[in-house]
Amino acid sequence: MAKGMVVIDEDRCKGCGLCVMVCPKQVLQLAESRFNAKGYRPVEGVNPEACTGCAMCAAICPDVVFTVYRQKRKPQRAAAVV
Ligand code: SF4
Ligand code: SF4
Image 1 (spheres, protein in one colour):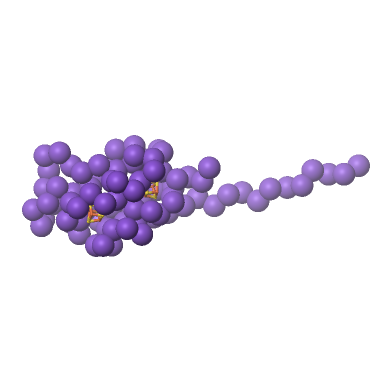
Image 2 (tube, protein in one colour):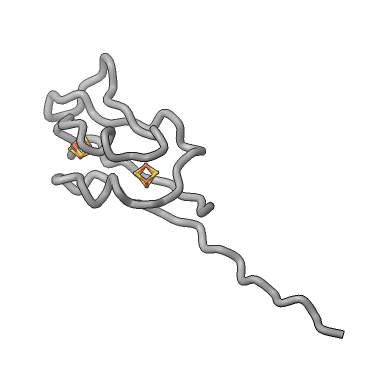
C-alpha cells in the first residue's frame, strides 16, 4: 500500500466536512473547539500514519486546502534465472 501525507492549509477551510466523509482511512476530522481565520472549525489530521495518498480529499475539497504527497514504490527486481 502506498504511503501518503497531506498538508492542510487550514485557513482556507470552510468546515464543510466533505473531505472527512470521503477519506477511506479516517485520517481527517473537523476541529472540535478551534476556529480558523475565517471563523470555521477547520479540518485536521488525526490519524496521519493511515494516509495512503489517494488524494480523494483534495479532489472533493472546493477550497484547495490539501496538498497530497505520495511515496513512490521502489522498483521491483526480477529474480535471477539460473
Ligand atoms: S490522501 Fe486519501 S487517505 Fe490521505 S487524507 Fe486524503 S483522502 Fe484520506
Ligand atoms: S472539503 Fe475542504 S473546505 Fe470542506 S472541510 Fe474539507 S478541507 Fe475544509
